[in-house]
Image 1 (cartoon, helix red, strand yellow):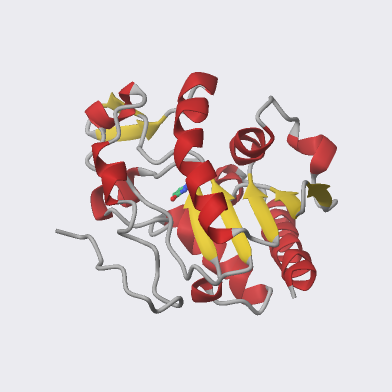
Image 2 (tube, protein in one colour):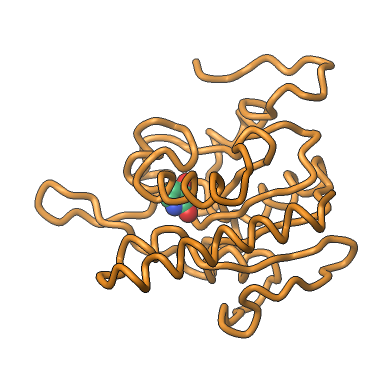
Length: 204
Ligand code: URA
């Protein structure tokens, strides 16, 4: 299997520790998904990134942000001078929600009920990690964290305290992939990079 033995080494990724996640039936998304995609990163990470849900590539690989959105994320991280393995990266929803269109599997946004059901796993991750900073990628991640519908525009790029934790809201990397205009795309990637950099400063 893909599960990783948990050792006393605190730098050991917690990926695999949530293997019971694979058997999650808290909502119906497991039925059409290949597998659950857990968060990844060291338990010692002070900063957490929160995406929406696995995409097509992630669903097949069982690994988070390995598809096109992940490439944009890596680009933004590189600009911010950060490595993915310095961070814990997770999604608000752990199973891929999609509809068939010909041979393609097209992403569908998770419903509020699905986001809420998956909050069980998010709370577990937060309790284990106690991150100093959470950078939310897109509106779903922000809404999942705050527990009520949030307008991304109201929070964008302004860090705020959520309990003891700094939250930094930015765009989802896949937004850059949907934008045609190259200058606008560049604005989005650099906006994400700035949010990551500011988050890192708050975490350290
Ligand atoms: N988009 C996300 O929000 N998360 C992933 O893991 C991949 C794409």
